[in-house]
Length: 352
Ligand SMILES: [Zn+2]
Image 1 (cartoon, rainbow, N blue to C red):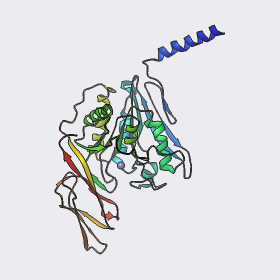
Image 2 (image 1 turned 90 degrees about the vertical axis):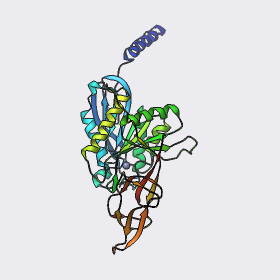
Image 3 (image 1 turned 180 degrees about the horizontal axis):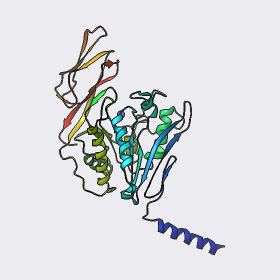
Image 4 (image 1 turned 120 degrees about the vertical axis):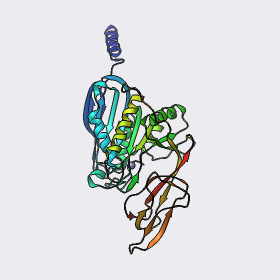
């Protein structure tokens, strides 16, 4: 009997050695892709206190082994340029020429997309990029976040989160790089963000001395799990302009080259503008908003960036820049509700 066990152990060992260095099947949700193949399926989130959700996922498993890169868009389901970019990228990615695996989640917040509701998941009224790691027994946004943490964040080695100006936001493309204080993580994610190539980079200071939030963004959740991650934004106000979609596709391919998932050389962005911090200007009342500046404009502290009228057309408030810096985004539509964001003003620093 002991001999039989030993023989079986040898067979398992030999099979194991044969498998070493070879790509393996990758399963995410109902999608299982063999090496050199792609598979589509759903990350199924069961019903709880509110309805179930099916999140589409595309797994592109390279013919050669390599890292697992997760690409996630559509947490805000009306930030269309980022969603279209990942659809396009997933269609064109060729598993036969790929080293490693892409897990592509092009549309996280399906209800937001279908119902054309910006910022939130209309099912439970929550922001789908603030509640990671989520909860298995929460409302839909929390259950989706929980499933994505298990199925995507924990299965990947690197992660990119895609956003853009929402239906009501006028925005110029930029990316986020987090300074977490973990050298290995920060050096790797810095390489990723420079390879991506957007020339405006906001620095997030997610230092370990900060209290770890109980609910956070997907990129910070990835960082907490030791996975280098960046966020990128392009597109605005419902548009899907080629220049924005192409910037996101090109940037992703460059990160894949940087991570040796694709052959080729990357030229990282040479002189990015590092934004040390940004100030959010919010509205202190309901009204009709008229912008006076566009994204990319440099403004001085106290300068007028827009104004609000009441519903009789009377000017009731001059909106001014709280700091000097560059306008990253500004309200794109007249609707303005008390507490809504009006603008982000970024403060430029010399180096990260
Ligand atoms: Zn967003």
